[in-house]
Length: 170
Image 1 (cartoon, rainbow, N blue to C red):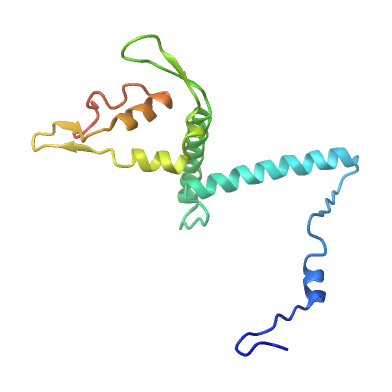
Image 2 (tube, helix red, strand yellow):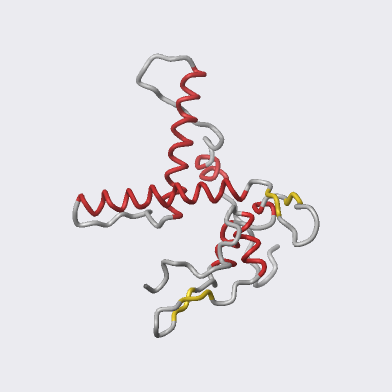
């Protein structure tokens, strides 16, 4: 007997079974004659390419491309490709063990940065770094923390924030 104010669970298994009937199975249909191993390799290769471009489009804001001309579309693809190349290099560097130069003593090997933080966490740490200028176009970095210097060094850019850039505010 149901308790007053509480609905009893009604479960219709037939539609659920019909909806999940093919979960975990796939069918790879090809238009050329080949072995099952070759068809699977082809599928896996295409899947890797598709995932690479999807990830790249997501990170460089290319999910939906809106442009009024072919030149604009082509330009956005070129810029996106450059962004994906830079992102992939940063991901590669995040996975490397690095040599950290200590003020005193021998350098030490440091575990990969990817073991400590995600790419988004690194972006958050580095996003606060600002270059400011004065009225006569002299520029300087706002405070750069020790952790931000450490991240730059471990990504392969030691001393990145130690000097003012020559390209700033000219």
